[in-house]
Amino acid sequence: MMTMLSLDTLGFVPRFRSTSVSEVPSDARVVSFPAGASHGPAGVWVHVLPDESPDWYGHVGAGDGELSGLWCGPSPRHLTAVVRGEGYIIPVSDPDAYLPIDSVIPICDVRRIPNAELLVVASFRDVAQYGTDGLRWIARDVTQSDLHVTTVTATTIEGFAEGHDFLMADIPFTINAGTGEVIRSGLPPWAR
Image: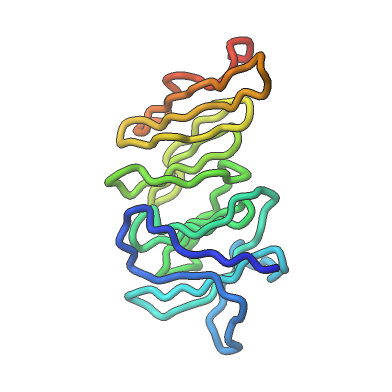
């Protein structure tokens, strides 16, 4: 069964429209993410209609994770597409200039830094920040596993590492949103 996705604007006013589709016209412009990948059944087709350039169809390859979605960002002219944890930041007017989000795999969360053209992308252990020019920073091993982002502000990213039994409670973490410095680690004391 094909996954149908709709666009989450993350508070941006998108300069495009986008949705997943089940069929692609034979005369359509087609772009693959990653480039050259086969159009397998695990991926998702998206139709993108930029305000300032011709429309196109993209096939977004799937990873091995769970998260799938379409987000506007890190600017109103960028589409971030994630299919089963594998993601790409795509300038909608020049989709061939896409950036793979390969610093955190699988992608488990996508958020926006408020009032900025910046995205926060998280995996089970790591958190990264992307701007329109690509990766700005990455905080590695913020937690041992099961990282959950709860709050993103202009200055901090907060969340917790999920505890797995009655012996281990959730462990909060805090990251400086400007630098990626881990202010409070989500690692248990014996792993720091």
